[in-house]
Image 1 (cartoon, rainbow, N blue to C red):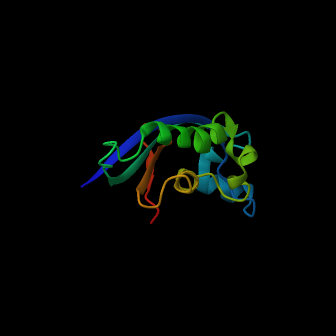
Image 2 (image 1 turned 90 degrees about the vertical axis):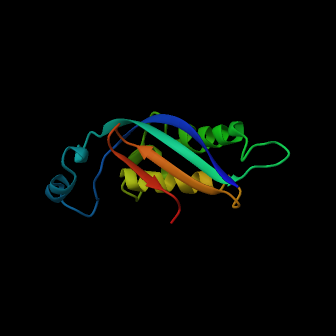
Image 3 (image 1 turned 180 degrees about the vertical axis):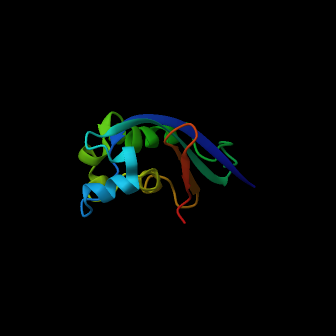
Length: 136
């Protein structure tokens, strides 16, 4: 029997969507207002889900406190109130789109969660726009 446990979290961050190797005009045509040279921000919401067998001793798949600590250390502390383009090393040469952000988050959390568990991260950039990554 496999069960999924999920933890919600959030962080606020600024970013600019653009490619350094493109002209401003091309960036503007592709990314629109998200190409603002002065950046723009989002109140990101995320759900991190871990799926695995229930431990017969504890009754847990994973202790939610451990999951909460991993999310705080790997995501909230690293991204909250930051400019993703300027302050987060993973985005020095990676466009901080929602798609790229969710993969970065998944990779950061994955290294802290035992490989016997499946991991999924859902990242909401806005209440209506969100991305999901399962490591595939």
